Image (cartoon, rainbow, N blue to C red; front, side, top):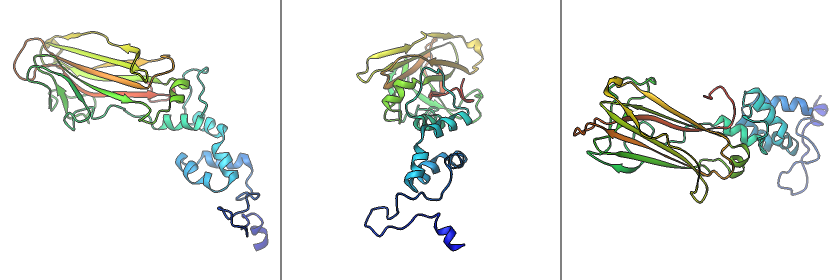
Length: 274
């Protein structure tokens, strides 16, 4: 029994190789299709950080494009367009898995950290508690503007956020923008989003123009949504700016209220999608 088992385990080299194992022997004689099925049922990070380090054979399976393409299929990460196929399915899988809001401090929970104040008119920007319940019960703060124009912005560096240039150009993931706003009295609301090249040249832009909100809107929260699609290669930054003011010029903070801003890259047609 002992001899039979030992023939299936890696053989220790007598040489001074780094691994110390005979690279001609596989760590456990597991058929390829069974090994791939095992990997498909393990957590993805375990496959990458543990399994692929066992031996060359396991590394080849863990790096195989078909493994990650199959994993995407099983977990519902389907391509938006069959013509935009990623060259690296493993990277595509993890970008789908790690989809997140790229806007920092979207509700003002850390005051104005990570935001650039562009215009600070009237009595300036302020963070306060919502005066009307937001559809998301977790939202407990919002930004509010004053009686002169107030705007603030964020610039998202996609490469720094982990999205490679090849991924952006090959897949061109949908870029979903969402912003929640509500009036307190007669208000104006503005939003502008720009997709930028590495030299900051504008590739595509969404600027819907000023939205006028009467007091009769009863302070209800509204959502602005826009999705960039088929924008072409070269996008490296997303510039977001929003703001507004009240239209009655009352001192204090009676302007537009803003919260729960989000920008997400959506590589696949998964269940989170709009």
